[in-house]
Image (tube, rainbow, N blue to C red; front, side, top):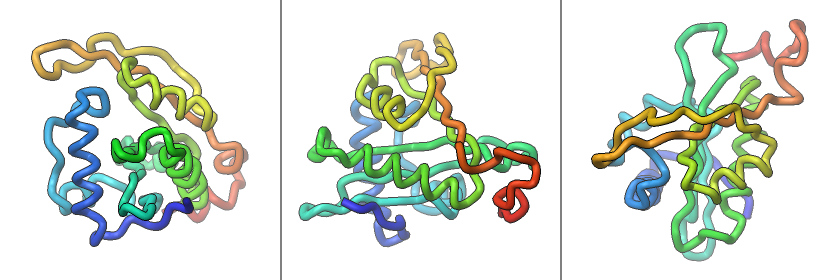
Length: 173
């Protein structure tokens, strides 16, 4: 399965998968999925992908800026969501590997993720893709009447941001 660009027409299925993730209680601090305009405004226009199989949209991945400050222009937070019907089929791996490649082509030098420690499958997925654990933020958010912690991970590109004269830094949009 080769992920393809996420387009506005995919939004109903992307949102449905996002809602499935929210329902698990271990995917995000969000309690509801936003509308397209809100989601679109919070994510980079590049590095948005969907995975489609014979049953339809099986998952999605996207990145969002971590800061509006210019010095952090190459740092983004990654999100990967897989439809429950497609868990364990390699969809997450295909999406994460593809979004890493797309983000590097766009000049992103560091991807980060904050994952609930209970989401062991997501932690394994990210580690296999080259993310390293930085630490854990204890009781960082209060969700559904209980404190939740997150594991902080990052992946530094081996292609982008290696040297000050890196052409990807000069062309970064």
